[in-house]
Image (cartoon, rainbow, N blue to C red):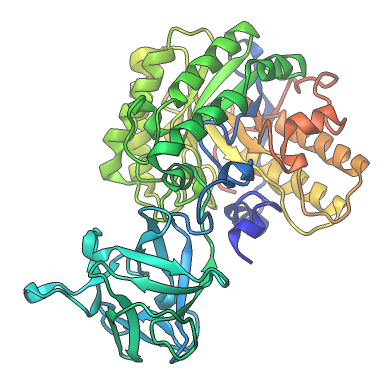
Length: 530
């Protein structure tokens, strides 16, 4: 099943990975004490404004409807099977530097990730992160195919021509004006002239299989292109979240919003292509509305430069995770920009330095960035809390506690989803054991505050009743209200009802106006692994 099929069922697949990790973690016996909440007893009850300033297609799929060839966006994985030899195009298994057609079964060698130039023209990135291109060595025009370039150019650009009657039946045109053809299993060349037919006897015909892919900020802006993307995004930013939403939030038992933003917002109004300007104006409006309705704002850097998690939420182009030590300076600049802009606004409550880094991010690099990000916030604000995210999927969720304890008004964020094919009671029991223990492990009396930055009243219990959802929501609130900084529901609006707090409250599944914050959360006296 591809990711676009999975998304309507659950938040992207890494949530389920976290669930599996949690299931195998051993419980730790600890001494517990009551401790106060954050400053003046205030504790955040927030909702995420997901899918607004950082696009996530599963939240509002209709945003992508008008993109030509919308099934061929950046990062989409494709395979090409020759109709004449019945084998897949692939990188040669021994060297990986030439293109052949000798694979009988699907493998990583047969998968290519698209970099979209326009609706019909693409670069093809192989599993070794090199790009398919024409062999232009020795000054020739190039007819042989190689996989050697790490940065694509004209020679690495291909047009995918689809059959009108069968869009998965394609020809691939190279930059020399000729089409790829399979001469033998070991020889693929770009020297075929276009034929009128699409029969199985034509060596330039391939069956294209599409799977995987992303629907993030890069895909939507690059998909619509420089003329349409600014119009589409402006309309989305002006209509998806409006002032009336902030009034509704304030009237329904919430006191804050967590607003995901992308790194390109710091370059507004002229961010690097394909991103488009305008999201900063929308964030400015959010701060005005928050002030009007007495709400606090948590700015969340959801997408860091070069992507910290390889996911659509990180605005990846093709799933590559490239954030690292050479990205730190640019990321700190984003935090500096955002804090400087809103430091004097009374609604600014916290700055989250990064959303959902993953295990592949070096802990040492991450802590170095958190240190510098913290300093950037403090340069402009002595009162804003600084939120540091735990790496997703890490077994020791307390790995940041000794580090964060050295910083005043610091917060540790853990995301606690409970998505599994269990019964109602099994899911609630899991919540009351593993999820509760994870939160307890990062909630200490002498360290940073704890924050459940994302959770949702959704599960994979089949045919659950409204009353069962209400029971699940009540159980979650009882656990997450113990977080000393607070929590934020994911998300305010979503086409999938239970992921939309607006829908859940309006339809009586959750009522926050009749529940109160737990006054004395149970916390650990010292950090320990879980």
